[in-house]
Length: 392
Image (cartoon, rainbow, N blue to C red; front, side, top):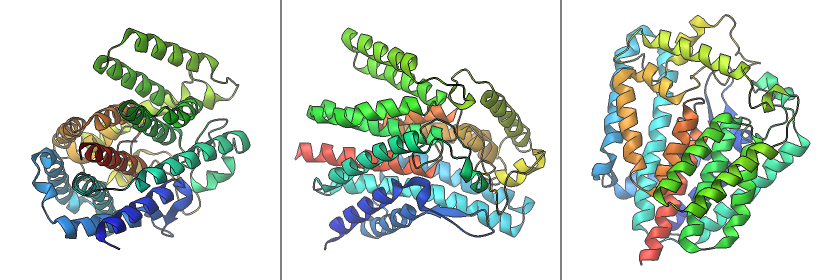
């Protein structure tokens, strides 16, 4: 088996494991450290491609913003070392390495799909995984509407909402919408109307997450789509579908499915206030990636994590941009936005994907979430593969 096929197989395995979401999460006992099984294969693929291509992919000028951003974040981290214990710095550095891994994965997988001839097997696997994501999400919605028995693991109950196997509405809706954008662009380029079999259920499921950030992101992407491909008919159909979605979405007495709920807004405002207070400690260089847990705990009246009740929000803030602002300072945030803009310019899919995740990330930390970095970058690789094949 040649290296190209090995890499393709490893990517397929990682995608399958990814589709099991939080069920494939591995936690280290008594430590605030965890990883997902698919990340083992992400690391393996990245390592093989590093050996195969060496520094060639990194020499492309479009990746300069990524390199500069990670250099600055590393400098910021080094400057913060003296303020934290060895254990705290070790855990924080692992977060840095994890984020770096995903961007190395992106650079080298993009290069791989652009320069190596691919079979159609990866897309077949993606289609099967998408079917599984759709089916498992509908099953959860109808048969497992209360995650209350998982509270001891730090998860919110999310009553009567679609959370799938990802257990978090903002992450789940981001997965749905990224897949939907991918298949919509595939439909346009190949005129394969069978793709509607993926697009329609993903669209319905995105509404059933009751994620307001997801709704705003969908509107933003729709507006961007119309600007790029203006058509009066498209505008009218798009508006009708969005209005119908909001009108006919199931209503109930649960606070979680009330689109006008205010409790989550108040929680976010409090979270933003804590972020600004911590950022003021070092507004230029930040507190170092990722020391947030140790600073955030100071402002908590009650700590919501521990061996039997771990919090999944104590290591970050609701907004991805605030996470970068606090940990990398104003310089880090500026470089981060530069990097996002440069990524959005690389392809149409990346443009829609970055806009989608950026809008949601104002309210929920999805731009830095491992699931979404992996899916965004792998789908972009598959898009590159199709463009390469069509040009041969």
